[in-house]
Image (cartoon, rainbow, N blue to C red; front, side, top):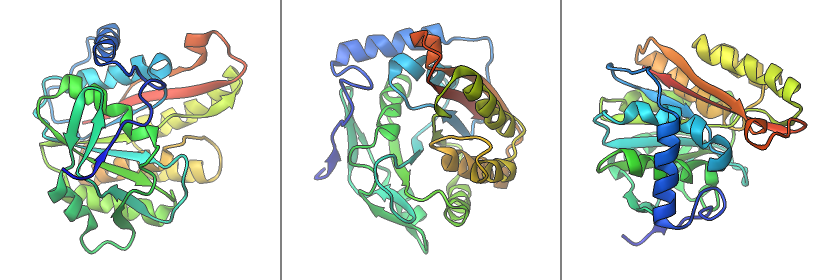
Length: 272
């Protein structure tokens, strides 16, 4: 493998040392255990991407659901926080690396996403320093056996790009593929304002209403850095006739820090 994307946020968003990282993820998964179990096929997860200390337990509520699933490839759909570009970029390298090892890119699925696409291209746009893909991979490494990934960054969350992404995701969907929409919710509002905004986002997801969610995001009625990833995921799942969405957890950074003057919201959910 010639092109391996090295860790960019180990030591900040999650521990740099392998044993410490393994122990932290095990603890979060144990703390997030619940009686809710899904025997049917899971299409996708909505999972937050902040530092583990803030959103790790919320993320773990989703990751606990895939422990017994036969998943061979995970498609991770992320916003591009640091770099704007038109369209959607699939990482063009060979693998992503974390302190837990190297995970290969599924080149076959990448090729299918790129085929005859007007908006989806291969490159490194939005991948170089992006945390919103990287933070999910150690969880997956701890839960799944051998698997590959397809990391996708959204440079422009306009409807025309999201519609094409949803169509492509529905075309490649099969039982061995899990799709993840990586997103946090509102940023740096007071607890009460954040709760109001995030409740709106939660309701559109729980109601399985990607059209309404897209409109609400466009009009500023709710906020999410990865809102476009969520819209694309829900639209793709609808195209494949998945029937159920369940909210697993919603929290904010104040639940950890005790400071509710400026919080960031987090949510996890499952589509099955």
